[in-house]
Amino acid sequence: MRKTYLHIICLCSLVLFNFSCKDIVTVQKLDLYDEKLAVDTNSINGFNATTIFGDDYDKSVWVSPEVECVQMRSEKTNVYSGNGALKVTWNKIAGGCKWIGIGFGWNNWMAKDMLDITQIAAVEMQVKAVKGSFKNLPVAFAFEDYSGVQAYYGFRYELAAGEFNDKTWTAVTIPLSKFELDTKDFNLEKVKQFVIQLEGDGDIYLDNIRFITLK
Image (tube, rainbow, N blue to C red):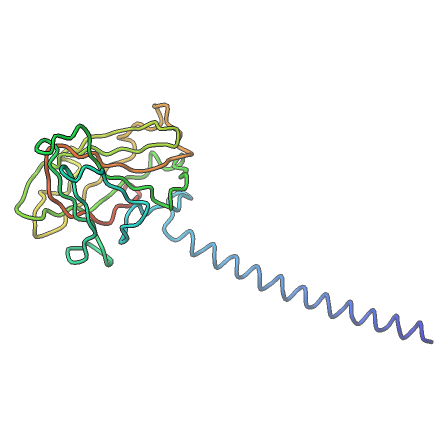
């Protein structure tokens, strides 16, 4: 009789345990599903690191150390979106610098895999003149991988949505195909940073640098 009681107690415990496990597994599946939806919201063909610069001037943003040629600071008044932008002022010739630029090791300097977006995406940024207006933006854009290989593309007027001025923001859009990343010795699976090489002189606000899907 005692053995029978023991068998009944064990059987009840096993049934209760199975019900508890089923409830736990169901909750975990819902949590994981909800989290996946949140991550994929702004992705492009599975690429999630779509924001190169949003609001924060943090450790992933750098500027050449030659202060006589270039200065960059966080801007809180003239912003395109969010709470912050960048103000970049440079004069390469007057300062006598060989090379100056700014860079973005976005996504906390982690290696980014851009292999599946080079033909369907572009880098877009918003630019505003600090004073006056101009048509030419004397810069070149580049991506660099973690082996040190760089791929550049210089600014062309057709990349801009219009003239640059101190009243409105102007979008600059560079299709990734312009960099010819697929034909160079460039590791698209280990992209390090996005670089803007500065030439001549300029004084601009810069904001909302991100990847977009080409229309």
